[in-house]
Image 1 (tube, rainbow, N blue to C red):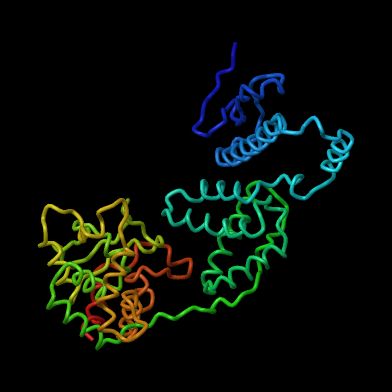
Image 2 (image 1 turned 30 degrees about the horizontal axis):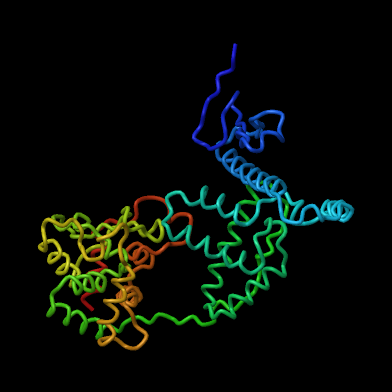
Length: 398
C-alpha cells in the first residue's frame, strides 16, 4: 500500500511520518547529470519553522550549483586553444580549502531572506527595507560571503565606511543592529558555530546626532492660537498632536471611527491599520481628548461625512503619507517655534508637561505609548481612561 504524502504550505517540502522531506525536480537541461529526475532528501525535522529555513537554504544551494553546471557547459571562443595541462592544474588548485567555498553557512543575502521571512511576519515594510539596506552596505563593501567567512576586519571596514559617508552615530548603530541580528538569528537556527564579527564594534553613537528640543509652553499656546484662527485640516492635525503627544503618523493615519466622543471620557483610539502601522506594541493605546485636541477632534468629525479618513489628503494611496505631512506642517510651524523644534517636538513637550504636574512615569508612558521597563508592566490592561484623562487635563491646562 502506497504511503500517503501530506503536503504542507512550505515550498519544496512534503511530510511523511511526521517528518519533513525536501523535494525538487531537476531541470530538464540538467537531468543528464542525475540518475533520477527528482531530488528527495529527508530534512530530519518535524518542525515547520526549521523545515522552512532548511528548505530555503537547500534550494538556494541547488540554484547556485545548477548555475555553475550551466556555465561549464557553455561554449566559449578559443576553447580549442586551451592548454589542458594548465586547466587540470587549475582544477586541483580550486579544490584546495577555501573559507568561502567550503563554508556550510548561508551567504549574507540568503541569511537576509531567512531572517525577514521568519521574523518579518506582521512587521511594517520598513522592517524589510532597513534590513536590506544594512546588508547591501556590507555586500557592496566586502562582498556577499557566507556569514561564517566575515572577519573582524570586515566589521571595522564597514564602520569606517559608514562614518566616512557622513552617517550619524545613531544611523551607524541602527545598521549594525540589523546585521548583528540577522547573523545571530540565522547562525542560531542553523547551528553555525561562529562568533559574530560585527558585534562589539566601537563607534561614537552621539556623533552628528542633534537632540530634539521640546517646544516651550508659551510657544505651544501661540501655535494653537494661530491654528484656531486658520481652522483647516492641517491645523486640526497640529492641534490634535500638540495636546495628545501622539506621533505624526499616528495622527495622520487615523480613521474618523478612531475618534470616540460619545463616551464619558472622549478619547482617540490609536491602533494598527493596513495603511499605517504602529512603531511598537505599546503604541496601541487610548489617549484622552481634552483642551484643543478635543476641539480639533470635533471639527474632524464635522468635516466631509462621506470620507472615512480623519485626514483624507494623507491617505490617498496604499500607505499614510507621513513624510508629506511632516514637510508641509513643519514648513508652516517653523515661523512660530524656536530653532531646532519640529512637529515631533510636541511629543517631547507633552512628556515635560506631564512631568510639570507630577504625573507618575508609568501613566505618562501609557499616554505616550512609551515602553515601560519591568516584568510587572506587562500584566493587566493598564490604567483606566478616567485616570489618564485626569492627568492629561492637568497637563494641558498649565
